[in-house]
Image 1: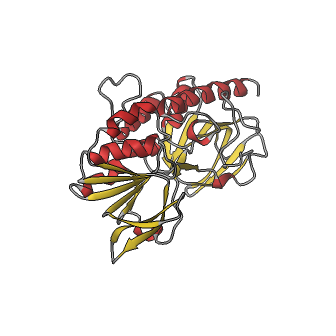
Image 2: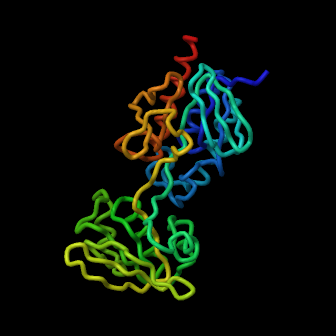
Length: 306
């Protein structure tokens, strides 16, 4: 007979491993599936300064490993596989992966969201070779060089601040005339004498000559095109949820995030959505962890009624 778990968690970020901790600590037979490594997108962050309990901050990789160890201490099992399909039509939910199929009475989806691309010609070919999505991962390759950061939210501004300490010059390209980032970032950024703002502008083209030489940008107010010469471009324009594998199995919003409120309950009984994958106002490590605890609680409640 096929093994049926109590709780099957998809994704090993802060939401997933918090759910695994709470579920396994409650005595539930719990397995977590992760595609790459513990921590998910959190591992791409060099310094996390806003997660409680770390008065001097913590790097994302270390925090991810600690979360995994905490959950496994109580018996949660981790397996590495990519989810390619699901069937939530029966009481025992089926999840299809690159490592076989799994059955579980409840499923907690915590697959998170990936960086959003610009979607212009040459981007895929230049990724990792001039075009990047993680300043803390790849910024060190551009010491004393010139780079551009695309975006105006918290992540983009944090990337620009980090890079300003490494590189010769940072161009911050934003489609609006003011930053969307929270005000705590504004003052330190304005004090950086090697950061230049390129307002009301979007990247239209990569300039290449065997390798990245710069970008062509268009001013959205004047329609004028100009060139910015740089050796690297860091794209930080938001995320896209990892929900392709769900197809029509669950309700999604217009941006393909799972529709779920603070209870993390979805429109399918016994299926929950935690962390960046669900509709929510704030996507942070601490809110993802909170979602994981909620999801495990309501999964336990659902199981008690079977």
